[in-house]
Image 1 (cartoon, rainbow, N blue to C red):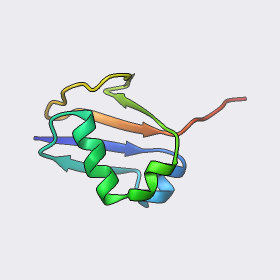
Image 2 (image 1 turned 60 degrees about the horizontal axis):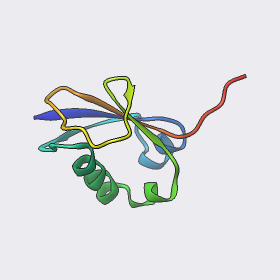
Image 3 (image 1 turned 90 degrees about the vertical axis):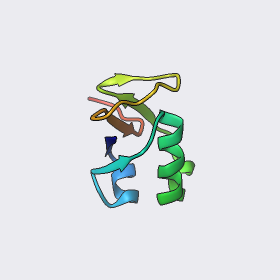
Length: 77
């Protein structure tokens, strides 16, 4: 199983990438744990998470091919 993780804004700067593939994750909390292991400085930033273009507030189960985005706060003008 594989999910694609997208990083935006300052999170892309920290990770030095806009996207990364993660395998063998079964939930968003499990994925976050792996991302924190890879990029520990992310814990110091605020961000929202979306799964397949939908902002989440719980811990959904992930399926093969899901797209998860880590998005810092942003504003428009």
